[in-house]
Length: 83
Image 1 (cartoon, rainbow, N blue to C red):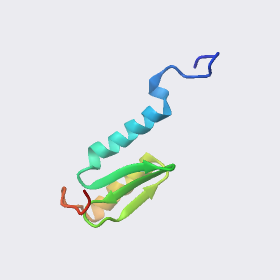
Image 2 (cartoon, rainbow, N blue to C red):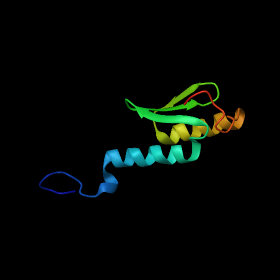
Image 3 (cartoon, helix red, strand yellow):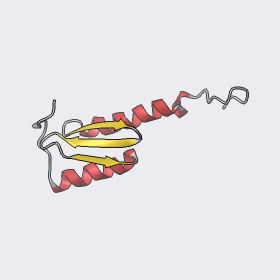
């Protein structure tokens, strides 16, 4: 942290970079089955087969929800209704 500006010069701590990294991690794993996005402090995953949407407060929580949902009712690979 720069003591004069109060800005952390390390891009690894930039909230936008951290958000995009977390979003990318979820999408890398699940984008063939869910549409994943972040909006207004909420994480979303919409199933590509039936459009059911799951929400969470954190990316970790959403990852857990997706894992459980997919285990109970697998989404067909890229066989969904969403573009």
